[in-house]
Image 1 (cartoon, helix red, strand yellow):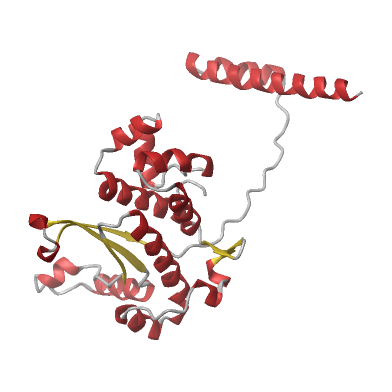
Image 2: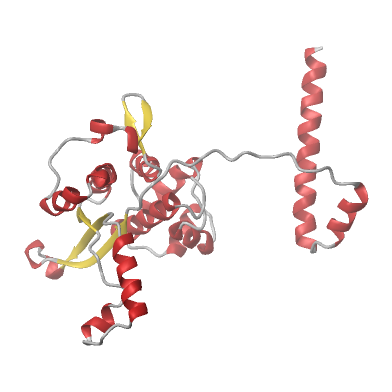
Length: 263
C-alpha cells in the first residue's frame, strides 16, 4: 500500500470509522496507545501515510479489534481477496467474490453498469468484516447517488449559464456510482427502535492494481558534492544522515564478517 493512493485513503477512512464506532477515542489517544504522534494518526486516517503490514497488530490493539479482521480490511482495501490459500485481485476473481443476491438499489445500478459488480462485491466483503469488528452498528452498502454539480443554483431556481450547463453535462457523463459503505451507531434513548444517532460513510473507489516501483540507480555523487549537500542541511537533518551512514557501515561490516567466517 502506498500513501496517497485510493487504497490508502479507503483504509484510512475505515480505520477512522472503527476508531469512532468501536472505541470513541480521539486520534491522540490512539497515538498514545500505539506510541505515535497524533499527526501520524491523522495522516494515516487521511491516506497521506500508508500503513504497512507490520503495524497492523499494534493498530488492532489500539482500536480493540481482532488483528485478523484489520489485516483482512487492509488486504481488501488493496483489492486483494483470499481464494483458497492465495490472494487474487478482485477484478479477475469472478464468482469467487460471491454470488449472493445484492440489494435492490445496487441491482438497479448494475442494470446499466454491470462492469461495476466486482467493486460492489468487494465492498460487501468489507462489510462482512466490519460487522464482526463493529457488532453494535448497522452496516450496509448503497450506490453513490448523483448530485448535480450546481445543485445550489438549481435549488434556488436559477438559470444556469451555457458554461455551467456544459460543466453539468460533463459531470454527469463522468459520474460513476461507486459503492458507499454506510455505518450507523449510537441508539437514541438507548433503544434500537428509536434509531441511530450517528452516521459514517466511506466511499469505495475503483481500485487498480499497483505497478511495482522500478528503482533506477542514480549517478554517483562526488565527495565535494556530498560535502556541499551536507553543509546545506540543518543540525537535525545532519544527525539523521549520520545515523543512516552509520547503519550502512554496520551492514557492510556484518557482511564482511560473515564472508570471513564462511572462508
